[in-house]
Amino acid sequence: MTQPDRNQREYWNSLAGIDPDAAIIDPLDRRGQKNAYLAGIRNNAFLRTLERNGIESGRLLDLGCGTGSSTRPLLDAGYAVLGVDIAPDLLRHARARCGDENCLFVAMDGKQLPLADASVDAVVVYVVLSYLTDDGQASTLLKSIRNALKPGGSLIMIEQARRHRRVTEKGLKVQRTRKEWQSLLRSAGFASERSSVLRHGRFPTTPLIAMGLLPRSVWPAIRTLEAAVARITGVLPWDYAEVLFEAKA
Image 1 (cartoon, rainbow, N blue to C red):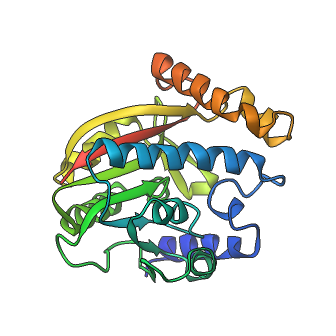
Image 2 (cartoon, rainbow, N blue to C red):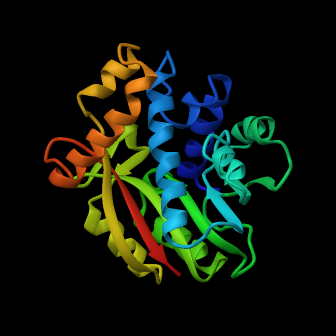
């Protein structure tokens, strides 16, 4: 394992001692409200996209599953899920959250998937490849994902994007442009079908949610508003956005 890979593993393992939801979304969200709100957007996007692609059952890969926050809703919807992550300490939380019925959690090296070719119906990813700052390594992992998918299988990937590429979090993360993400998918052999902006990183209501000033009863309306604004504006010049990429093997 290279030093950058060790740094990534050490970083994610270090988060295993905090709240399991905060560990994989925003470690600084002390109240947990922001993380719950963002998890809802992520979960809805995954399930809605799986349904739109006609994948209503089957075997899924949750790449970078962390503490199982994204895995649990997939299991509840009736899918069998393999969760893989670079951090063994986070996977202990995933096993505690999800049990062992219709799911399995495996540590990986961040480069190659421990899967046979054509073994899963779909792969879901939430802000994982943003932490592969080397484009060659990201492309290699995407090729491994494509090989693991059955012919015609779907990659459903949410990643952070900006108008201009930016490295953040002391070099641990890169926010690529939408064109760069699409180029990586094509280089890995995917047919990139569509991409859509789900939300902006600094939407005005997000701090209010984090502070507990907006009750959960209004969150669905805020999600609808945020999605509508994202569709109209796309990626803003001064902010990152979470973009949903859909691609076929």
